[in-house]
Each structure stands twice: as structure tokens, then as C-alpha cells.
Image 1 (cartoon, rainbow, N blue to C red):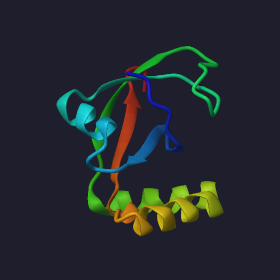
Image 2: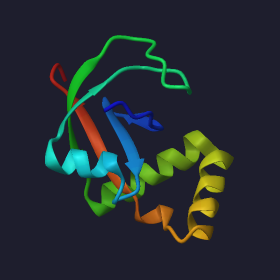
Image 3: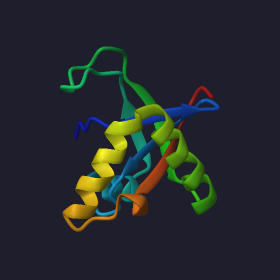
Image 4: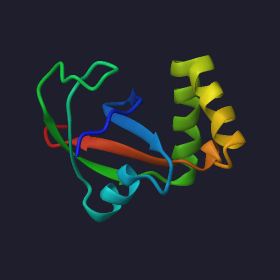
Length: 104
């Protein structure tokens, strides 16, 4: 299943945040193998597919990654957090995974 995501890169690892109950999180918990490709905001693929393994990060790393997201996405991610909280969610309780690639 294709799903567009916001991500940040740090030290050769791509990090993705999502709601812990999202389909993405459930699929990764069942099977950590992922395939990713660069895409536009509408999900149109703009580059080659690359295989990787996703692994949920620990709490300390998760806090660091949240800071990277705030730095990269600024106001956009803050507004998403407000919307999430207003709708009963908790964006700070996100499922954070690091994706490592076979060639790294």
C-alpha cells in the first residue's frame, strides 16, 4: 500500500512519524520491510524505489527526532499538532520509526 509521509534524515537514517494506531504503524509492526521512493505532495513517484527496514525508535531518540521535525516543518507541524489535539489525538504520542537501507 502506498502512503505519503513527511520525513527527516539524520545520519543516513530516514525518520517517519505517524499515529500509533495508523495503518502505517500497524503494517510496520507486522512487517518491518518497507519500500520508499521520492514523490511529490500528491504521491506521484519521482524517483526509484529503495528497500529498507523500519524499526520503532526508543523514547530518547524519538524526542530528538520530534525536534528535527519541528526544525524542518516549523509552523506546518505545529498546526498539525494543534489540529490533532483538538480532534482528541495526541501528536506527541506519535509512532516514530527509523528506516535503514540495505546498502547502508
